Image 1 (cartoon, rainbow, N blue to C red):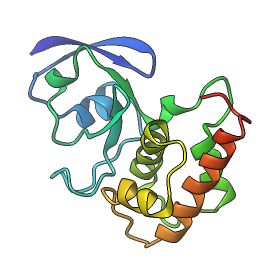
Image 2 (image 1 turned 135 degrees about the horizontal axis):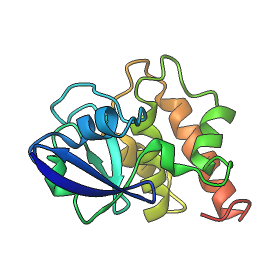
Image 3 (image 1 turned 180 degrees about the vertical axis):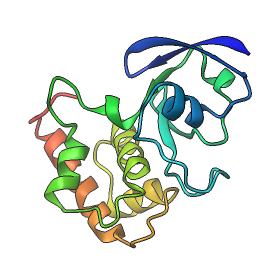
Image 4 (image 1 turned 135 degrees about the vertical axis):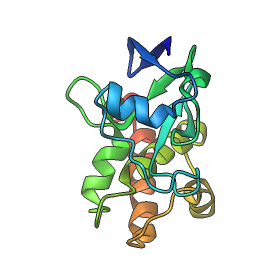
Length: 160
């Protein structure tokens, strides 16, 4: 076991774990965060996605030791000051979720996409979102929600 210090959702947290433990297990089991979920365990489905220094990464296969010194954002840390992130609000407005299992990965992937490309085309949205699988096939609603969030952010209704 080792003392691993992480910066998660703006807070510094120290855990005593095996350095090879998947980051997902530390986030869920040691830190009590329920946004990232276990899906496939192979970095293929995207339900375990977190943002690491603003980039979407799969936490199910990333050793916690590789997360030291980075800024980790989970779904719980995406919003601030009792206000939803524009992507989260767009998900509600467009009624995206069916079963909801993939929503953590979808929302974080969309937030990262819009941070890198604030005005994506439909093709760019599809390309940017294609790494997170949706079992319920709500891809058209996901695309509409990303467009809506991009519009809100471009209009300056929310500073992010």
